Length: 320
Image 1 (cartoon, rainbow, N blue to C red):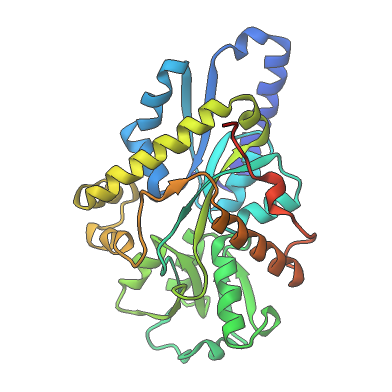
Image 2: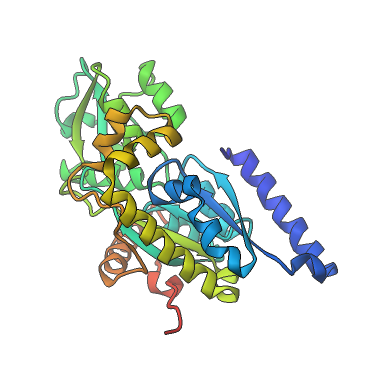
């Protein structure tokens, strides 16, 4: 599982590998697909089953897996040529594009309606989202929870200046929430479902009706242009893995619980929320692109990202 320091180490290793392959071309004859993954969803299932290794073996492609706890550092690695492929929520690609990262949207999926939740302690004085004013609200800046938090505030007519932002990755935010160091926590599944099951936790609002919960697969720009067939195979195989997983939810619950360590009853909650469908993996559809551009526009207006972005500039269109 990669921390920011470990991510820097990964970037350094990537730079060294680039130099070696330039000096010794023989080292580059076999292709390694370096994947960044998080402990949920179709990519986690593919890792457990070895589906991508089996699909790509005939092409002489080996697969290397690197675990991350959130999207921002994962995409930092993809954009800096330290990874070739990864999965993330809606916000991290905006920051990666604004930073000039070398990456492309290569696929998308639609998450459950209530994929995110805003949590408070059971006895918290926060009863409505208006009560967040002046409170400490934690989420990982640059993650999909960042977008969710902004949408929650806007619903109540609040702005970021009305709260104290606490930028924490999920494990640290979970600990801070448990010990009372923060007042509220905006978070995604499966962390949301785990915390939601705690009788000392109360859900103020979910993302149902607030946002569409698109998630994206991103490919390193250079790798994708050099190996479009591999990326196409990966997206196609992930769609097959997702469809099979959706058709056998009982088995999928057991498998994902084994991967994440989240109890099966809670894992089942994440897989049976409204609009949940693991099989909806595809190339980037028009609806996802429209959503992402609107999000980019909103984040620019709010000065969350430093420049106006044209999302379509970094959407991959495979040759037909």
